[in-house]
Every structure is written in structure tokens, then in C-alpha cells.
Amino acid sequence: MPITETESAAEDISTEETKPSFIEEYAPIAKDGLWNNNAVFAQMLGLCPLLAVSNTVINALGLGIATMMVLIISNMSVSLIRNIVRSEIRLPVFVVIIASAVTAIELVIHAWFHELYLVLGIFIPLIVTNCAIIARAEAFASKNTLGKSFFDGLMMGLGFTLVLVALGTLREVIGMGTVFANAHIMFGDGMQWMTIEVFPNYEGFLLAILPPGAFIGLAFLLAARNYINQKQQEKNKNQKQQALNLEASAV
Amino acid sequence: MFLAQSSPFLKPGLSVSKMMTVVTLLMLPGIVTSTYIFGYGVLVNIILAIIFALAFEATILYLRKRPVAIYLNDKSALLTAVIIGVALPPLAPWWLTFIGLFFAIVIAKQLYGGLGYNTFNPAMVAYAILLISFPAEMTTYWQTPAMLAAQFDGQTLTLLETLNFQLFGQLPAGMTIDALTSATPLDIVRTSVLNGSATIDEIHTEGHAFGQFGGMGSEWVNLAFLAGGLFIMKKGLISWHIPLSLLATLGFLSLLFGSFELDSNPSPLFHFFSGATMLGAFFIATDPVTAPTTPKGRIFYGAGIGALIYIIRTWGGYPDAIAFAVLLMNMSAPLLDYYTQPRVYGHKADERDNEASS
Image (cartoon, rainbow over all chains, first blue to last red; front, side, top):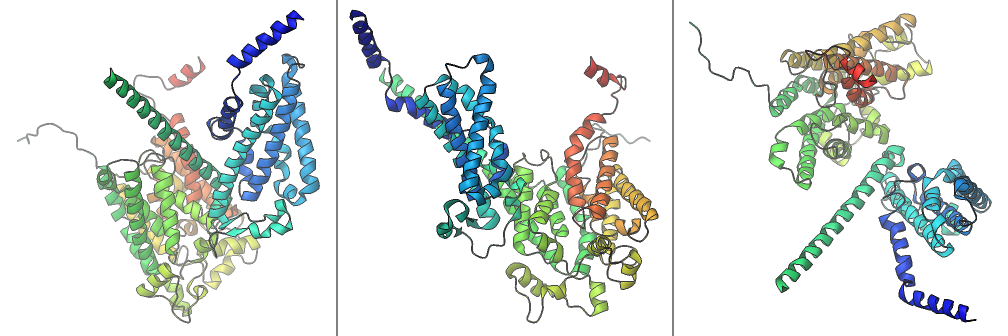
């Protein structure tokens, strides 16, 4: 009895002193996934499906969500078995988990979103080769708890989906003058109204739909991201400088 | 008596600005001929292209915080604009020129670092992008050559009518775009040979594609560009390597395949004097920034372009091929430069290979 008492007391102390709050623990994961360590912007992973499938918003959204689901499933599974699997054989085990998740997602899309399945085609099975997924399993899920791994998968997937959709919007607007064309293949026939014609009577700019347009568009998105980061850094520097100046003047 | 002369004894080379001006001026014979044959649209294209080019160049230089006046004065944007203006179909709508110049100046030139840093020829990047994106406008808006129109009682446009069509898309009452335009010689030859619908002899007797010695109409334009090109060569602004190897390869290939199958392969003269061959050989492929710098490299480069022109014209998806051929060889220019470095005095020829292997 006294032993358990001291143990629980020690636990109490540690939770009070060192355990960070929920937000402090999860906010960095969200920030990493969405911006700082974004799968596309920062890690440059998964570019092949990104460039191939982002020709319309709906295609981009479809592949983005499928990738996100795979990421969540694989992250959670890897996190659950992280203490059982020996580190020597961890990579084959991860690959088997990811491949099973992709197969399951592929069957789901095939069953319920058949038209989307036909459009995305080979790129659904190819999610298995998306390096972002095994990178997260190795770098995050194999070292963190179930909850955190789930959240990391969600945020990384969301970050990937957002970039895909941004690129998809850019290419669809410039290339065809519409947004959400073919919305029914994802949301059902009732959602045809979602298709917006940005420019009526637009003749189309074929380059944006073709692969070169994907590369040019991605380059512009990356340039914009770098520009924002640079501005942010300058701002931080200025603030630090001002704080230093204030201190100096106070002294 | 000796003429006393103090140092420096070396004559300075032409400045970039002066060189660009001379090359642009020597395009004038070609431009005038082209205007005479294809109508005022050529002039409108060139003027629009120059306005757009200078505007884009000034804007992006300002955004990049470079001295606008100095860089505008190097006139490289002017030359790019004139080349695009000549290369575009004469009845091209204004937005085609606008998009082309945007890709040429902003993306292919300035985003790569400005003059001297661009890997790809800006004018040809613009042309390739337009050809891929707007194939209908780029291939069918060629006004019927003057001699053909006179022969078959075709219609032509005055300067004002041309402007009205290119800027606002309005044709005079009773005229259609189909009545004004006709397929280019290269297009006619390629489609009939591909379909197997007509042999070269039959096309000849129809009289739409072949002129005196080259393509109907475009033969005179090519002749004028050849004259201008020979003149810049004589002035020492370009070396003989690229144009000669380009034309020699193109001529050799067309002679070779023509001697096997006379029915479906036009003569070397037709290849030389139709499409944009001479413009490409003397004014586009010789761009000092995107071509190799060593003599041997230049010969390979020109030969590569010549071979690609023949391959794409004969078996490719497009009637003419200057843009694609030049862009493909632009990519290999650094490699050609690396492998054709001349022996430096005092070193053995295979010094570098030894260094690499050891």
C-alpha cells in the first residue's frame, strides 16, 4: 500500500509540473502538418500524385482525402504496434500496414465512388508509394502515442489535401475557367450546382491542364510560401531588435 | 611614316545593346517581305509584341528591384518581341501575343535570372506554349499569301480592318476567317502525305503549296531572312557553325529520305524555303545565351536542331518544328559545352579524362 501511495504521489507531481496542456501538446503537430513541415511545401514528398492528379479541384480533393485516410490508418496502426515490433524489421511491417490500408481505401472508393475511381485510376494504388506516408510512420508514429499519431496523420493529410486543392483550383480556373467541375462524381448527382463558371465563354488555356502547368503552378505556390516565410522571419527579427533596443534604452 | 597610336590597341567588341539593335535591324528585309505577302497583320503583331515586351520587362525589373532603364536599354526584349511577332500567325488576336510575351519575358527570361541566365530561348518558349495551348489559332490564322490570293481571287484586309480584327475580333461584313486564311505549305504537305491522299507531284499540280522553289509565299520570306542572316554573319555577330550545320543536316536528311521515297518527301529546297527555317537557322538558333559556346559544340547543336526539324516535320504531330527543336537542343547545350571544351594551351588533350578517372 505505501508503495502505491508514493507512486501515485510522484505521478501527481509530475503531471502538475512537466505535463504540458492539451493545446501545447497538439498545436505544434497541427502547425507542422499544415505549414512548417507540410508534406509538399517543406518535405517535397508525394509530388508525383500531386502533379498528376491536380488538374481539377474534384480530382485533387478525392486523392487528397484518400491519402489522408491512409495516413490516419497507417499512423494509428504503427503507433499501436510500435512497442511490439523489433526495430530491425520495422520497415517491412510498416510497408505491409500501409499497403493494407491503401487496398482497403481503394476498395471503398471502388464501391461507393465508382466514377471517381475511374478518374483517379492508377493513382489510388500508387498512394502506397507516396513517401509522405512511410516518412510519417517512421518519423512520428513509431515514437508517439496513439492519440498524437492520429492527430499527426490528420494534419499531415490535411496539409497535403490543401496544397492539392490549391493547385487544383489554380489549374482548373486557368485551364477551364470553372471550379468544382464534375462535382457529382464525388458528392452525388444532387450536387451538380456546385460547379461554378468563373469566366463564362472561356475558351480554355490547355497548358494549365497539361503536366507543364502543374510544374509551373507548383513553382508559383512554393515561391509564394517562401515569400510569406521570409516576411515572417524579417518581422520576427525586427521585433527582437525592437525588444533589445527597448531593453538597452531602459538600462 | 608610321601612324603613331597609343594604347589600348584592341578594338572593343560591340556592346550587347548595339548587337541586339543590329540583329533586329537586319530582320527588316524579312519583316517587309512577310508583310507584303501575309498582310498588315505581321506589322501589327510586331508592334503589339514590342509594347507588351517592354511593359512586362519594365514591370518585372521594377519588382526585382533592378535598374529598369539600364536593363531595358540592352534591347534583348526588343529582339525577343520582334522574333515572336514574326513567328506568330499574321491574324493572331492580341491576347495571343500578350500571353506569349508574358511567358517569354516574365517566366522564361526574368524568373530564370534575366538576360544571360535563361536556359531556354524565351521567344521559342512562348511559341511552344502558345502552340500547345491554342492549336486552333496558332495553325489556322495564317492569311492566304498575296500571290495565291491574287491567283484565286481571294480576299485581303486593309490595315484598319486588320487592326479591327486583331484587337476586337470583328471582320468586315460578308467576310469569314476561312475565306481569308489557308493552310500553310508545310501543313498541306504533311497532312496529305500522312493521309496518303496525295503525292508530292499531285500537290505540285494543284499549285497551293509549292511556289517557285520553296513553299508558296514563305519562300520569299525565307529568302529575305537568309539575306539578313548572311549579313549578320558577315558582320561577325554570329559564327557560321550553327546555321551551316543546321541547314546541312536538314538538307542531307531530306535528300536521303527523298531519294528513297520521292512521292512522299519534298525536296531539300522546299525544307529550306518554307516555314521558319531561315529565321530559325540565323536568328533563333544562334542566340548567344542559350547556344553552346565552343565551336565544336555549336556544330553538334546546329546539327541536332536540323535533324529534329526534319524528324518532327516528317513524323511529328506539328507541321513546323523550329520551336521544339531549338528548345530540345537548348537543354543539351551545357552538356555539349562540357564535352567539347577545346584543349587549353599547355595541357594534353585528354587531361580532363585522366583527372575524372583518377
